Picture 1: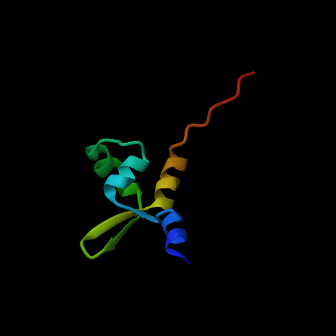
Picture 2: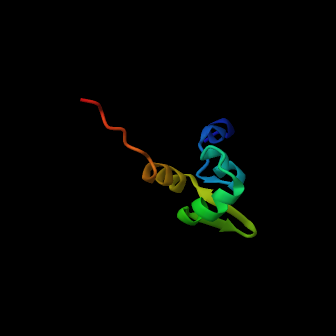
Picture 3: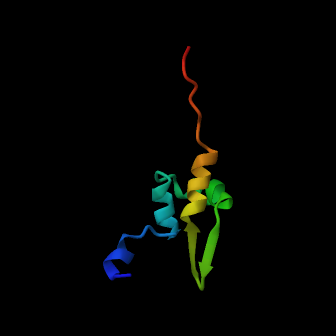
Amino acid sequence: MSDQEIAKLPSALLSYPDARHYLGDPSAAKFFADLLPELDVVRFGRRSFVTRESLDQLIERHRVQRRSGP
């Protein structure tokens, strides 16, 4: 796989600031207190990341289904 092909791959892991941005930029307090406990975190040494898969699952769990009108 070339470097260009690798660069086009979506990241499986996002930093906390990138995860907040992915979710629409909730406040840091909201993210850390309410949302982060629902997410999968991966740690490499001192760095912590959130899985993109868990972000997508969080969004799906909180999705509001609209009812079609009569």
